[in-house]
Image (cartoon, rainbow, N blue to C red):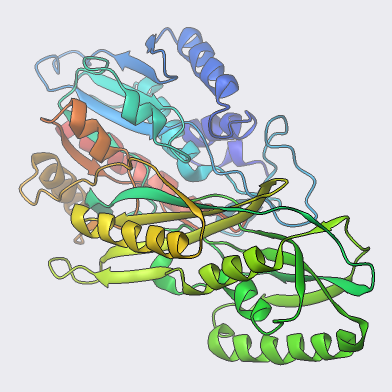
Length: 479
């Protein structure tokens, strides 16, 4: 069975089409053109801005002309992650979807339900004439995942609605009324490549099979960070030379894999294998109950051409050990909410002589966000790295008196006979940035249920899509 035949077919058919359009962050030309073609096909008014955002409008149904305009909003890019050994070109290949029981997932890659299903739900509402509603706008933003570019650059007056429903949340039955702000801190380690000693045994040490996940929404789950695990092992090899190191990928994902090429005396060859096995047992004792697929392996490799200066390699490894990662503080006003965190996202050799360590900080308190970013920057600075920081993005302060929150909560209660959860999220949503241009906006963030976003384990719960679509249409009818 293909996903386009799932119920409700209108939503799933559109989502199926979206999965076939490549849409990596900052390379969204194809999905933008697809949206334009969709609007033309269905005679929908549409507008484009210079950044890459798309806005569509649908008039009110007869008798609802005096209702307020509601903006449905989602982002058009997706996180592009794949498992090792998976042959997939995210710039050209469609996502291969699989139905697995009550879930839809992808074949070894991210699914892109974040936020493709939000886009599909908005588009379905625009062409579904089975329900009554006031004026509708659908805003599709550019490059949310790697820079919040579209939301940051949105022009004043591009949308006209004063109520916005963000469709980028991941659990049906939850209504979000606030989110964390964030910023990035990067450490650049400069070194002079040195000829690789020929009398050493070279091996690749690899950490793989970790769960990873979203650096905001999953940070409290205590998933292991592959960069941290690898750095800990490297400290057990003080006499080794470091030839290469790479770990993680995207700034908003917890590192799932990391590897390093090291050189050691041939006399230590058997010892390093034994020490890795001992270290693996230690890590399994710490996180094995969570990281059931974790693997630590070592394999022989050819002698590389160059290695990293010993002094710089030592400073790098120490910085990876000391640099904070994980939850730094919990909210006192909303129990269970992570208030402040930091993620050691990636370690990359971006060019000969430069190693780039990317981190991201989040907090619902602006001063705490700045404080943890300063701590990370200080770590890199003390390690002799060049430090760069982004300007970041603001959070969205919860409004417990929000009218749209009340409509959403009442509607859920009436439809399903149970209370929805009213929450704030420890992740970056575009909502905070919208407030800088549209300070009057009344907003919520809602969505169907999905798991494992930003990783190849991403999956979308089929029953929740139909439940949520019926709920969304009723909310729009009541506004």
